[in-house]
Each structure stands twice: as C-alpha cells, then as structure tokens.
Length: 428
Ligand code: PMP
Image (tube, rainbow, N blue to C red; front, side, top):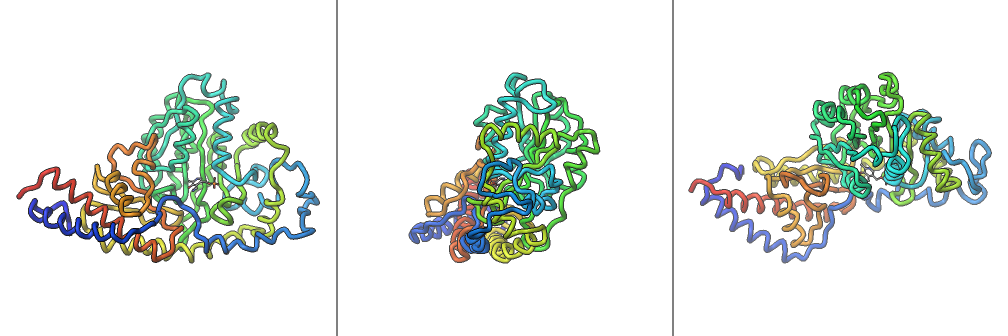
C-alpha cells in the first residue's frame, strides 16, 4: 500500500491499526540489538583453530624469526604475503600491525596532525583549518576520528558508483581539503562498490593540497555474500601512474575474517609513506604481536585460503541478509516511504525512510526494545540533514531474533511515516 497516496481518512484508519500493532509489539518486552556490525558467535567459531595456533614450539616464522621476541616492526612477511592480493598492495609496501585498522587510521591522522605528511609543508594544524571529504552516508567511526582531532568534515554525496566525483573534484581545489574517506568495496553502510572510473578519477585528480591523502579503508575487501562484486581498480598503482605515488593510504584487517577483537590490521602505501608511518610507530613500540601474526599466517597461509574461509562466512551471513530483504519487501515494498540497499557483500543494509522520520523510527524501536544505530550516525557530527538514514546491521543476532527485530523495525517505519504524512496534511 503506497502510504503517500492515501487520503486523510485512510491514513487515520491506518494509524489506529498501526498504533494497536505497536502496543502489541511493546507488550512483547523484546530486547534486541541491530546496532553494530559484529560477527556472530557462529562466525567466530569458524576461526576456532586459531586458538590452538601456533601451538607449543611453533613460534618460528618462515624466515627463522623467533616471533616471541622483540622486533619486526613491519610485520611478518608471510602474513603480509597472504593478504597482499586481497588488499592490492605489494608485500614490501604492506605493514601488519596491531589488531585494529581503525587504530592505524587514527595513528595516521594523529601523525599528520602532529608531524605532517610526506609532501606537506607542515603539520596539518599549522597550515590552518583542515578538512576531510566524507561520502555520506558513511562510517561513524571515521567521522569520530575527525571530530576528535579537530578536522572539519565536508559531506559529499554517495552515488551507486562511489562518491560523487564531480563534487570531490570541486572540493579538492581548496588547499584545506586534505583527504577523503573511502570504503571501496561494500561501503559502510550502503554496500556501494567503487567503479573503475571512480577509482581512476580519485587517482588522477589534481589536488590543491600537496599532502592530500585518500584514506582507502578496505575493511570489506573479501567479504562477499555470494558471487562477489568485481575488485575495485588498483588505486595504489593508478595513483603512481598518474604521478601521485603518495596519495593513498590503504587500510584493512582480519577483524571480520578471523576474530574481531584479536585479528591483525594492515596499512599499505608508497615506500615513502610506509617509512613515514614506521618511523612514528617505532617510537610507540619495538614491534607488533608477531605470535598473533604467525598463527594467522598458519591459519590463512595464502589468498586462496582467505577466499575459502570467507565463503564459510558468506554461508552464515547470506540467510540474514535475505531475511532483511524478505521482511522489508513484504512490509515496506511499495509503501512509498522506505527504500534500502541490496549489497553483494559487507555487513550492512542502508535504509532510507520518509524524510524527517529516522529519529522517530529509532525512538519508537527503542521503546519497543529494539536497539538501532542512532539516527544521524552515518553523517558527520551525527546530523543527517534529511533525518532519513538508518543503518541495519544483521550479522550478529540469530535468525529468529533478527526476524522479530526487522518486523518491529518495519512497523516503526510505517508508523512514523503515517504520523508524519498526517501531520503534513492530506486531502480528506
Ligand atoms: N572500517 C570500516 C568501514 C568498518 O566498518 C569497521 C568495523 N566495523 C572498521 C573499519 C573497523 O575495523 P578494525 O576492527 O580493523 O578496527
């Protein structure tokens, strides 16, 4: 039923019915959570063998390194080799460090702020106000890093091909614009995959800032739900070909491959940028946790092993995403008040509701015991100018819980939209 075409009387009747249904939902006393994109317990079990690796006596790396000892700041070569293909970074330009790519993004930005970047005249704040381009909707933790470090955020529209490159190319003519956040395959939360042309333009564009960086957060590089979308073009090589060898910082991790809290993170870039980062990291630590790196290398020794492992994740994730579409189609298809993405990978579905309703939907869901990511979270400063976007994270709950949460969410979407349409005034 297309709510936007109903008369005042029809909408009022619909509202009464929806309110009754909502009261029933509240009475169920649910306690469900669709907030963060965490792997489910079943997914974590796929990596159970890691808990027994490298095993007593198995602490020696291929090159003879005793992983128990200090050193090896760039990370174990065999692990970097295993992830080089997925991240499209040559082994010698890849760093394996720590357990969180977000931490490496934060580190890179702090170092840019404190010390400046190769190609830059000074640390960022000494060059005046600085800004990052933020494709929206986007990942809230990217925005939180900028906010914490006093870097302004400029939203740019996300299209089906990646960020709106006309907008991006206009903005980068300003020297204060120092970079752009990108999640190239299966963007958070839209699931968008950057097209080759988008990647080419990011690599080729001239920027006013000499120390401009593309923060290429390839968090979902191998996280397909079925037949994967094509690998985005190789931005590191393309940038070098276009005369901007230092343009790109590639990030990735095994957080959603092995264990979200105990994985390994990666940074890849030009030799100059890798030396720059390692120079800063070397003041923080004498080396990363190589025992963890070794057990990862034993568990996932090459790109083929990573692929096979990710297929097992897909088997667990696929039914959850299918359920999202089934319920939203059934309940909101043709309603005129909601649209959502159908990603081929990643962890999220991006739901757009009737403008001005997202916060109300999240509030209604919360009062019915269904926790959603706060409305606005997918925009810089938590402010969605149209109050429309809601991020759905279906990976963690069991299928029964997910069904309840989505049915409840769909009801709240319809209820909030009906209220709003009525308040806006309809023909009798
Ligand atoms: N980037 C994106 C786009 C993410 O969605 C996430 C996690 N959900 C991260 C980074 C965090 O990755 P890590 O665990 O490696 O810090």
